[in-house]
Length: 68
Image 1 (cartoon, helix red, strand yellow):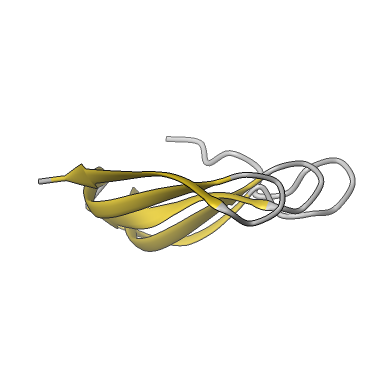
Image 2: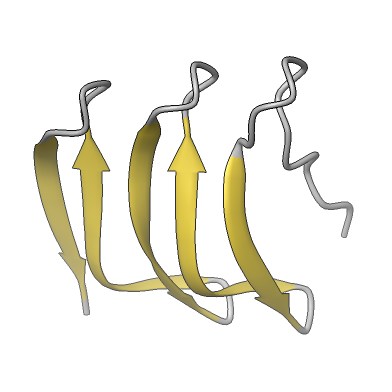
């Protein structure tokens, strides 16, 4: 499995997180091209778990989704 480049062409991060056995695992953050945090939450071996939060460009919480 090829991993996606973790950086935009402007050098800002697209996402931050860890892998385990080739799968997203642990706490992850996803960013917009302007550098603002878009979404954050936890993976367990590639599966979204727990509370995931989505933010607007100003950092305000827009939505919270729970994965059981």
